[in-house]
Structure formats: C-alpha cells, structure tokens
Length: 174
Image 1 (cartoon, rainbow, N blue to C red):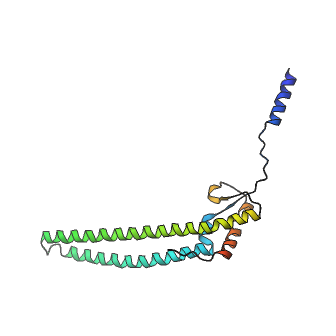
Image 2: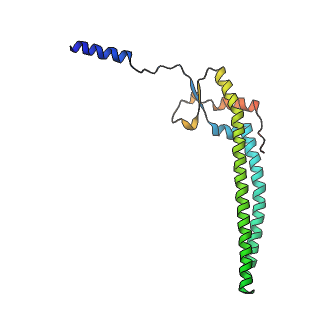
Image 3: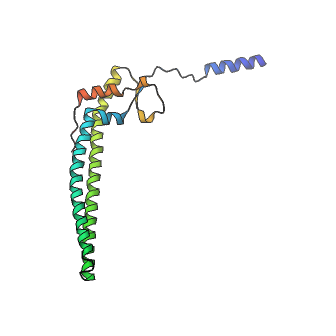
C-alpha cells in the first residue's frame, strides 16, 4: 500500500508538474534614457528649453515690473486716501492674479507639448522595436522601469538608440 502510494505520488508529480521550460527571449530597454539621450529626444529637450527660457525671461521682466509697482504702491500708502489706496491694491492684486494664471497656463502648455512630443517619439520608436524584435527573434521587450532586476546583457537600450539615431534625427514640437 505504501509502495503504490509512493508510486502514485511520484507519477502524479512527474506528469502534472509545472516545470517552466521556455524558449521565450525577453529583453528590456530604458525608455527614459532613450528619451533623454537619443538625437530625437535631445531635440525635444532643446526645443523645450528654448521655449522655456524665452518664457522665463519675459516672466522675470513682468515679475520685476510687478515688484516695482508694489513698492510704489506701498510708498503711497500714507500719502493717498484709504479708499483710493484700496482700489489701487485691488487693481494690483488683479494684475498679480492675471500674471499667475498666464504663467501657470504657459507652464501647463509646455508640459503638454513635452508629453505630445514624447508620445510622437514613442509612436516612431514602436515600429523600430517591432522590426528589431522580429529580426532577432525576440518575444518580449519590456520597459526597464518595470523590471526589478535583470542581466545587463538583456538591456537593448544602446542598440535601440543607435538604430533610432539613424532613422529619426528630430521631432518637431507643435
């Protein structure tokens, strides 16, 4: 009885075991590294930096004007009538509010442009990845951000950057 039970356990474990033998090839890439270090990714960053710098300069000038106006307004506090001073303070606070809204809208627009440009680059990168996977019999290409640990030999980031740099030099920001 014991012998048949042991044989039964042996055969059931042998036939019904879930041994994972796989010929699937799985590699990974670092998307943020590609976005920041490929020619197309660098063109996105440069275009956004230029826009951000021009907006930043104009906002600094506008901030300086607002600070000068605030100083001038505070110096008039004891000279002019209280009601007139309150009206000027109200107008000034509206100007500041308008400035803040304009600045926030501009920053949000730049962030949206960055996202759109990165999505465009990702769309252009997808067929490159698909062709590379097909040509090299790769089953999966995962994002490095989703991997806890992996062999460095499985990292395709530099190879993909070389291919991407040959095919796509710039991405225009709209």
